[in-house]
Image (tube, rainbow, N blue to C red; front, side, top):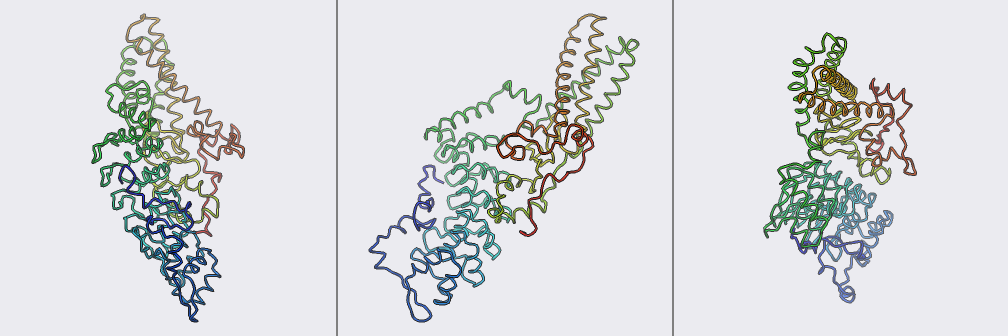
Length: 552
């Protein structure tokens, strides 16, 4: 893809602004004036010897009435379904463009051609036109009839390319589910991700990323998807790419230009500021305060730093201080407190081990429900469930997420009743380990409270020393964190909400009423909510299955 966009002038024709201008044609093919049109009128001879203007035949086909097409076939024979208009397009092209499933099935029943390329410079097939307009139901019919899911036109554009070029998320999801390859390139070396980035379709970029597309692939001009996102100036697409830690932010194309240079040249100042910030962040030796906080208390990465900090603080600092200082000084005075402290330490390590090792509620990979949902995408227009279903499809795990599940970017798995990813247990908190996580944070809070108690007693006897001061500071920090997590866990349990839902309730339609105000359909009162949290009752059926057997 050339960076000035001129390489695609003959591809990117907006059919919505031109009366019968077919997609993918060049300007020369459509510059026929009126007199030339009349002088070159194409005639079609019927079975009875009568003739008709070929344009009239295609007008009937574009009108989309099956009965009229049947009358046309009776009068002029099956040859009229194989004819081409003056631009080289077949009836199947226009039927696919209009999304007429019934008429497309009629063509298939009559064995009319449904997969011929046009005679123009680009050579699109009917499936390309259907994908361009987002008619997933027509795409389904064509694929069932044997059309190749990766069929390319003369410029190397596949159906997935066209769907991504024009922002057809549902159609792209259906194509991926039916086996479309995400790394195929057109004649310019551009993948579907290049086109989605260039056109500014963030949802499609996310879909392609989940499907495992190569993010750093360059086209024939040396441009990566980041180059093209910066060229178009869509900051959301640029930010989406920058979130990938492995992505190189300053690659150079064959003209020696970096993404920042392209954004500057096209006056996309918000993109320039974002990229400069990301480059500065990656090149910095000393992390910022926010990064340090994320490292200590859990950021979006998969660092084991918080886990090592916890283990070091307890095993190499807390326990030695307890054995060397606290026990000799306070054992005879505070023996019952020591027994309680030892008990809660046992609880802490048992709960930590289970929370760390236990499956938090991973959704099975490559589930049958995912493929059933993919097959139902062509029916979404009729069922009015397109957006709901698309948000629940995870193309990384290839599963249909239950209502309250979420994909964890750290674990790279979908988790049922996803609460959050805890760096201190190095695992997600979900349906199957949330009770053990609660016991862990409660025991941490109790143990730190005992630590503060023992430290204060030692200070009263021996006076202040640097070791006691450091121990108190550390114990107070972990004690505060432990009690905050304990109290918020109890609060969320009483409300029957997860931490993810609590902080992001505006993003989830099921937590809003028809007026957009907050409502919680899962709460049955604090007592029953607490029972459900601690006993881990099975799903009560709040998550109504959107898959209807009649549509499979």
